[in-house]
Length: 124
Image (tube, rainbow, N blue to C red; front, side):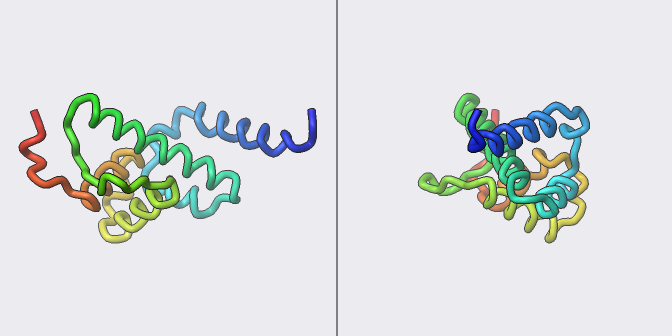
């Protein structure tokens, strides 16, 4: 094994550790943002990837159910860093949002940031 792989293995081990902790599913949005802001670069990248993956899943759900709850411009592809910035700004403007589970707070932040026209018409 070459030394080049060691940082990748360390990141994968850390990602596994972060993902297997059951309490992480209930992490509040404020805790998620604090963990992101207080972390070293490699951990920040992991949090960015997890956040981006969550948003990607929201997109797949919307495509499958044909129910859009937020509508970013079609050519916009949000990065994990941008999603965390949206979440952080939303918490700053509505502190109670920070008490919600982070993924729910992210969804609510995206709905506020990118509202859909006629959102009620898309819902079953």
